[in-house]
Amino acid sequence: KDNKKLPISMINELEVIKIKNKDSDERFSYAILANVWFQDLILLIDPHSGNVMKIYDFRSLYPRRMDGANADVVFNGISISNDADDTIYVTGKLWPHMYKVKLIK
Image (spheres, rainbow, N blue to C red):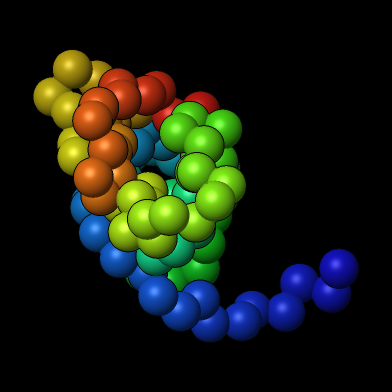
């Protein structure tokens, strides 16, 4: 791939998270988590450049119904946890559950 920086549309449900720095004298920095509407993805975004640093794929977390009976049942919910810097909660519209996940950086 040619590393073109293209805009990503339909980002939704933004949260600011604290991340541990490995390559810096500063202990923590901040990043933005964003859900991509109608995709089971969360983006980790650098708040200074706007560049996507990592893409988290949640397609296998809650498989959609294949018959398309309810298009509103989509991945759409991020909540920051006080448990640890790399733990979040995710859910979706009309989902019966919330999931606690640990982000791998």
